[in-house]
Amino acid sequence: MRRIVRSGRPGWPGTVLRGQGPAVAVVSLGGMLGAAARYAAALRWPTAADAFPWTTLAVNTVGCAVIGVFLVSVTEVWSPHPLLRPFFGTGVLGGFTTFSTATVDVQRLIDHGAPARGLAYLAATLIAALGSVQVAAALTRRLIGRRTA
Image 1: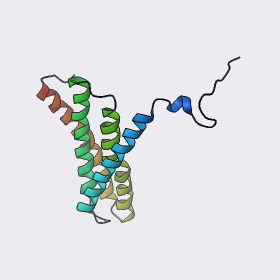
Image 2: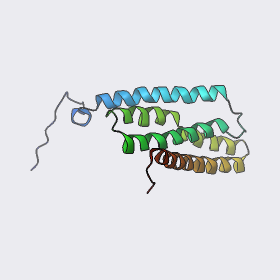
Image 3: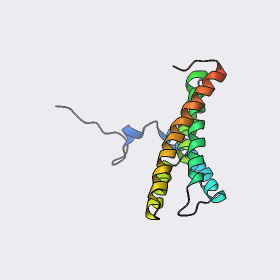
């Protein structure tokens, strides 16, 4: 028979979160910054309800390209501080890229009688996001003198 040992305050998942406080904090801070940047882009370049959501597409494409550069840099070029990846990769870039908004944009286009535009936007989002991360990673490797596998 196994004995379960609980640690920390009653009702607090201390064993799960122990030592994760700094990571949770930097992801939260980074997410706030990334989401604020995305929101600023949406305010700067608003999209009408029945229009193609170029701003969200651009944000996701740029964000994915930065993810490609960032991940190659921190995995193949240098060893960053342990909190940099959670802060910038998960927090800032996770908050900046907005695939949930892209999904809402597709539904909005369909609801406004533009299903073909919604499907085109969905395809463009997937192609642009995957393509930009792949191209950015390959270009980064080339710039640092490493071949892609």
